[in-house]
Every structure is written in structure tokens, then in C-alpha cells.
Image (cartoon, rainbow, N blue to C red; front, top):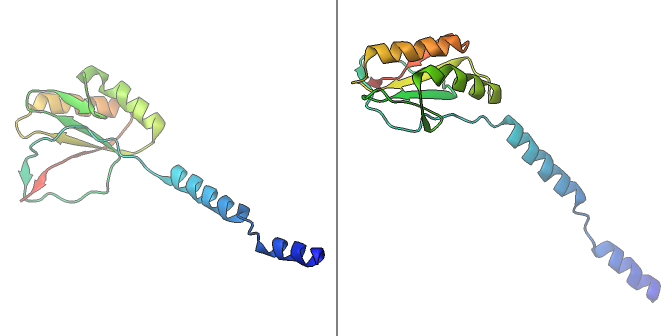
Length: 133
């Protein structure tokens, strides 16, 4: 009788180890393959353009306000520090494109200076965001 009870106890247990292994492997896979977008952190009034086209999504956004403030990664930065901040962001997540979200009232000279800083950081593809008509 004792032998029969021992067999019933053995059959009643489930080994959860393989399921937990698979769950942890999937978790690691999703963490490693996730891409994070570095938003500028503010909303700007983008100019309208009738010929605006949809570009592939970029991971780094730089916003320029009407008063000349430059925002990256949800914080305000100095124009001369844009290249250094980009290099830091590129070390975290390499990309080949940056999107500038300039307010329609932003001065052209500030936008050009930011573009120069982006080129200095080694990024050749720069897109300027606009609203579709």
C-alpha cells in the first residue's frame, strides 16, 4: 500500500523549470531587441508643406522652439553642446538619421547651427519635420 501511494505522489508533480526557462529567454530576447526612441521632449508648431513625405522612423529627435531653445532627450541643451549630446546618444543606440522638429517661427540661423552640430557628430542624414497639408 505504501508503494502505491508513493507512485501517486510522483505522478502528481509538474516540473515548471522548462516553462520558466522559456519565459526568461523570451524576456531577455525582447529586452535586447527593443529600440528606444529619444524624443525631444516638447511639442512645436511645425510648418505645413504640401510635398512633405513620410520618412523611415528615426530614433533621435531634436526640437527647436520659436525663442531659440534647443531640446534633446527631454531636456534643454545649448547649441554648442548638441554634438556632444548626440555622441552620447549614439553610444547608447547607433543610428544614421536625426529628425529636427523646428517651430515654424524659429530663426533659420539657429536651425543651420544645429544642423552643423549634427554633421559634426558624424550623422549625414538630417530630416526636418513638417505637417502635411
